[in-house]
Length: 200
Image (cartoon, rainbow, N blue to C red; front, side, top):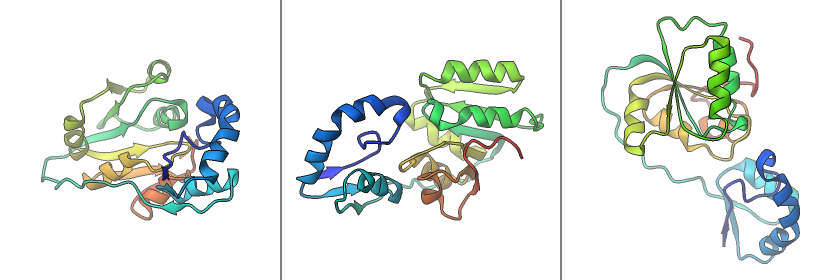
């Protein structure tokens, strides 16, 4: 049995794994062809697998343990929680904020990754007041979600972003993109904008 999660599928995350996927494609196709069954958490990933090799793929969404939300005083906070890679689109979020007054709002970006220094430099260059918290322990994340009013996830492409489920479960108003994966997870429960769009 194979459960695909994204980067293990040829064509996903090409900015990081394109060369590796090219080298591994013959072996990957052989493994997939002779497997007993293949599952994927989203339609987007299913289509990507079937584009590479025409095999049956069963969709089983990622499990998610919904914690009971507590009644807490929410703060005027716009929150982003993500790994810091270019394809996550946080740079577009920061660029969009330069034309929006955030005087009465805090902007928090939680997460770490190789693209973080670029994002910090961009926020400084544009004069956008972003508080970068870096990596935060998992047991603290839900409290941050619950005290935030707005959660933004501006990713360019995703498989099945659990962060969107976490934000919705915590009661945040969610803004994300129409990118594959994101739109599939939120359905009609979020505001969706074109991936990479900065203009209002």
